[in-house]
Image 1 (cartoon, rainbow, N blue to C red):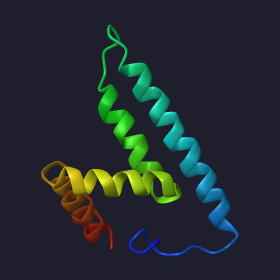
Image 2 (image 1 turned 135 degrees about the vertical axis):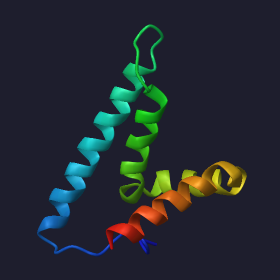
Image 3 (image 1 turned 120 degrees about the horizontal axis):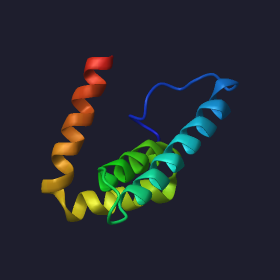
Amino acid sequence: MTEGLGPQRSSRSRPVTRIARWVGGVALIVLGLALSVPGIPGPGIIVLLLGVFVLLPESPWLRKKYAALKRRYPRIIGPIERRLRKSRDRAA
């Protein structure tokens, strides 16, 4: 189920990585919600979605919802998937 989410890390660094990912993802979601309030300038929805994408590898619930969105809106999710794949290919 975790295929394509990157290389496996050693067992010692994995909990640190998971905690950092959760803290960063939740912080981005909270910041996105704050920026989405009318009257506060900023790209709230984009920051919120970025937080969701950070948490995607860590949350089975989010992966299930993402798969449902991908089936329902392939024209929207397709370009996002291509950009993510292209950036992973460049990093590798």
